[in-house]
Length: 402
Ligand code: SF4
Image 1 (spheres, rainbow, N blue to C red):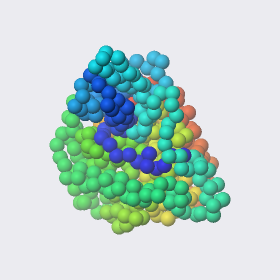
Image 2: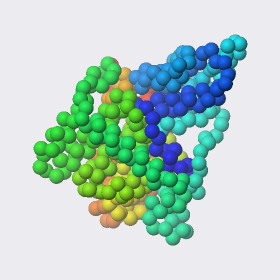
Image 3: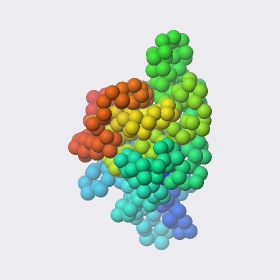
Image 4: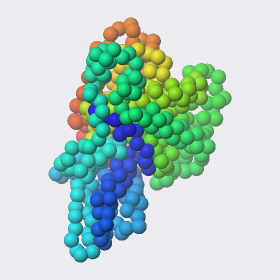
């Protein structure tokens, strides 16, 4: 399984698969054409990239990536013959009239592959499931998941995680200061600041926590909808969940940065099992793959932070995903705003509850559903979801509110 550095990526919002992935693809294609006399680049977007590319600003990010070169973006909403719903062709037309075309797939979380080629990356983990992790820990006589990460991932993984988490916290803090209207036709107000100020006036502890988690999740998701720089956790659309839960612990329970970074990386490892065995792409498996994965990530991080056992960390991650199974992706007008912003808040509250279940209920009865089981169920469920409900804006809320 690949390094956590490939799960936690920084790039332009509002969508890891529709902005970060295409941006990286374009930069890669430009590098391939370095030194050649290119007259124009022509990028053709297919499937989900074409259907929600306008709302997700895919075309704008592509034009940005190719600047100052001439570039044209074409939309082909058909899925015919596609091997992945997020497919794009990059064509370079040279000054002598010849051309080169390559087909790329934006596979989720900012990752991409050239069609027909295997994903290249740092495969540093000898396991890719929760059961595999537990066997490795037993065999190596390690009882702390972070120690496994430290042993197997890149030497600078702690510093890398710290940089990503700090950037995520800065996004929360900056966004809590902002007001105004989000881009696009929905004309949604930024409300994170108002929710945060309301939370300060509430004395009931549980209600206050709910509003604080909401404010922090809104803050990140509103910044994402505003096309600001994001850290995938594991995607941009679902990037509000993990920072919300960890920032809450930072501000309200005085967790140290060192404890938080370790917990963040442990959550990322658990989430990486989903990316490896199913997908974190809404276009491939629906919102369960984005929001469900983010909730598992956050629940695992919180459980590790509160020193729960490996069994309880698995329970929290499993519960977090189980109750999002079947969740559809239906962004209204193709904008990562409705239902996405509110959904991040709901998922952060759900992740917190999943951690509390693991702490207070897990020991009453052995869980019959493992984390690996729930990943498999999510994958199977995603496969049978109709295409209208997988980041195409052709069904669900997107069909009703238009
Ligand atoms: S509905 Fe979920 S998967 Fe779809 S764009 Fe919004 S956050 Fe992403």
